[in-house]
Image (cartoon, rainbow, N blue to C red; front, side, top):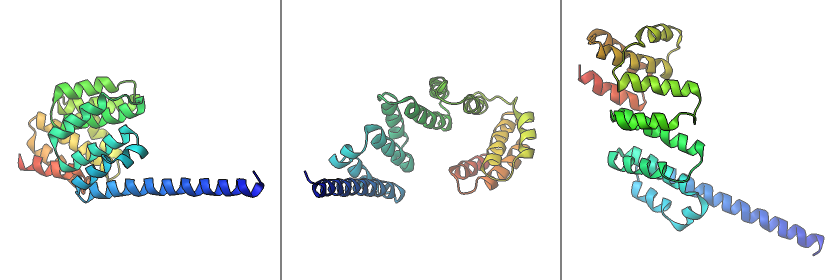
Length: 212
């Protein structure tokens, strides 16, 4: 083959590669947009299409489906999807990703058994610091422990306004609730709401304030 021939083959290969890459990115954007605009039927049709199965590994497709179920608020389908993904042949990093998502889901569901199962499952897959944070959440929310109050009250003084400080207020509110100190519970809930405005926690905090 002449030099010109090799150049033509090389150029054609680049064009094909760029075309495939463009098509793949376009498909991903269509799925994400459909989920964000709550057009779930459209999103699922694309995820289940032959083209999507060709371009995206099973884990990626099922993870997008899981996110759609979260957006839908479909508890039954979220549970089924989490179980399906946890039994897939996936990497340790992917398993950690799913297990973390499952842990927080079961904490919100106040399912102590499943949350504990995820906590044990994830040990060794994430950093010790992150694991201790999750264990703390499990103990405060599901075991009703209150021995972190003094530590958090001190820590919150060094935090700037924002989501992280809001989380401290949130978990302090839960602990004061366990201690039946209603005034402090409400005080920290309002502060948490202010720091976590526009997040899913704002909705949950509003529900908790109605329970006062």
